[in-house]
Image 1 (tube, rainbow, N blue to C red):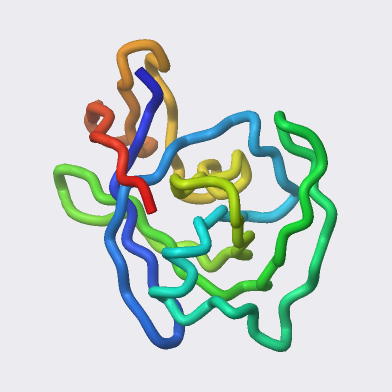
Image 2 (cartoon, rainbow, N blue to C red):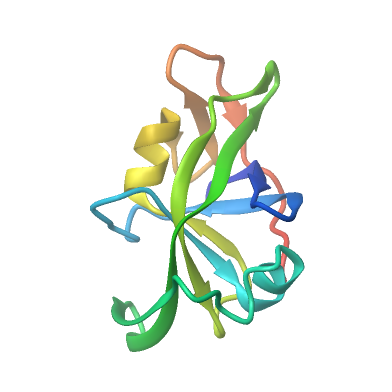
Length: 138
């Protein structure tokens, strides 16, 4: 079972709570979140704003062109005790992916620790173990 968490996303114009997949293969130097285009539309991040850049990204399926919007969303993860601290991060908008994905750098900034990837157990540093939630597709 992949590990999924509930996240609260806040942009300048919108707030959304949704499931996000923890993807340690999504490596980045800065905290980044990948949003499917439909969710980006809901959050007023699509069509891409003027400060976005079109970049070629390496993925498991090969190179893809994606828009990157710098420091455009605040992310917090829900735990049984409320929400974690929030982290401002870059958004990558995907026209192919249907799930929200958290990068390794964003997971680390949020303090997320994967305890058991097969059974979906995780926690925020110093917190109690949590279980994976069901996916949400956009």
